Image (tube, rainbow, N blue to C red):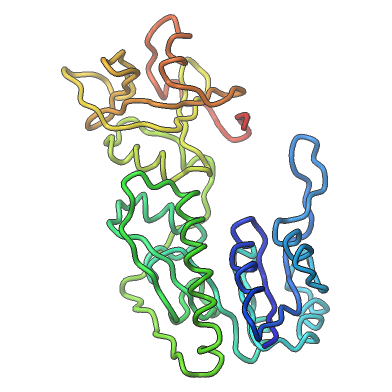
Amino acid sequence: MRIIYLGTPQLATIPLAALANIPGIEIVAVITQPDRPSGRGRQLTPPPVKIMAQDLGIATILQPETLKDDAVVAQIAALEPDMGVVAAYGEILRKNVLAIPRHGYLNIHPSLLPLHRGPAPVTSAILAGDHDVGVSVIQLGSKMDAGPILAQHRRPMPSDARAGTLTEALFHVGAQMLCDVIMPYAAGTLIPTPQDEQFASYIGLLSRDNGRIDWHQPATTIERMIRAYDPWPGTHTTVLGQPLRILQASFTNINGNHTPGSVIDGVDGVVVVCGQGALLLLHVQPAGGKAMVASDWRRGLRSLPVFGEPNLPLPGTHFNG
């Protein structure tokens, strides 16, 4: 079976490596984003999927700026693929591209669809406080993440789940699921199940402002943010006029009435008062600095500050690491 594979970031290398080991499948082309400037030197850097495709010896690697180019669409059609697989490619496929493979496209989405459609499903699940998390293999359609489901895996949400590491773990599970269903689906012995639209939920693209902390929110909400926005966009506040990223925190109790955002020297370390409850800071990262233990950061301060004042603009702020 002739497969075209569309993907770009490191996560997308996981299903690609798994597919390359399935007997009876030939990956006739990999389609990925163009090389982009990266790092402080802004050197032109190939996407991880391109590097893996080269390592696997895949002869045809396409890197179009967009799939809206008719010449690119014709180039893909000339490959005569039986099926396509899409994993974090970076562009929504239009109908003329969707129509090329005779068996359509399959996609790995790390959520219990129809919950948490969109580009950051694990972030969405952590923010919502879901008790379960999962991954789905679906048939791709014209509506985002709304295609029928071929397979779905459910597991309990870890209490310390962070979006980056959990997404990677779910992609490993999803890659194996994809390998298990691809042949039965192509043979017509596995019939996809339509999603129930009444349970659909969405999350949009994230920006740096999503990670700005409002200390009037409950401690439970802020602690979820810290885990949900790791690694992007990070969770941040301002202190003494400077940005500060909060990397890790845990719940704690306080006595007395304090203004949300107030920093207190607690028995166990640095405590920040929230709208309900408080958080014990464990690791932080000052702007321009590296991650550090919160108590070490506190020792560098002459007085106890209030977080979130003033409300400085954060886009463009540089954090090392």
